[in-house]
Length: 311
Ligand code: ASP
Image (cartoon, rainbow, N blue to C red):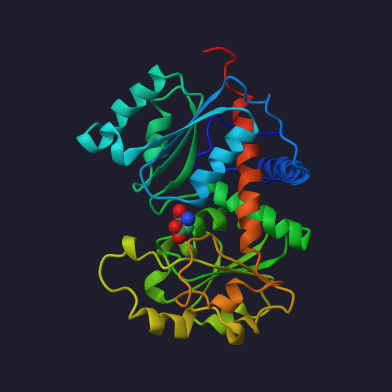
């Protein structure tokens, strides 16, 4: 198993063997989870703190479950009731966490770079659970694992990432991971929602859904992140759906065996029609959640191997 770092702050910079090894380990955890077994001695005596400055359902719960399945003591720090709201700085929070001998720190923050800043100040191994519009590395890992399970590989696949690319840390982490692993990545959306850096990231840009989906193996829809938009970047939800919402008519342009993904939470009827989101064979959205637990177990496992035994 090769993993070169103390923290997992981003996918950018990881090399194919690091990603492939993490996915292989996650696959073994997926099988373990399905068998109903646990491995509670692995993180016994370790403390995992979930520090979420932004809302989350799937990510926080799955880190909690992943930590518990491996035997860690898991604490969810609720930021709305913590001293952060009383004006404590991120760095004071870091000293508090050090004093508590936290081993693994999972951080979600509205500012890009906040987990990286914390990682320089805490003794714990830090995992970025989503920072601003920057990255969400464990989401990209779980997406890749889900794709690999359905398609058997990542290399050579056409993956269309659609919708609000500009505000999406999920899109950014996926662009890094999938291009690193040899997929052909397309981003599809209105010009206002495509970031300028897309070309630098080695992806193809489309503004028309039907052209962007043509021949795709994987169709990944994203949530329209209105909370991160300043001003009117899209006309209205109805207009957006007409041009960029995934329905049967647009999906017909992708390969007949293509899979449909969404990181959640979904805006049904805005970026995806309910019938497609719940499609029994094409939608793998439920499996993405399942693979999220397995991938987070793999990440906790790998990072814990590099921690000092006794703090
Ligand atoms: N749950 C994902 C994230 O935290 C996607 C989203 O919020 O739309 O980035």
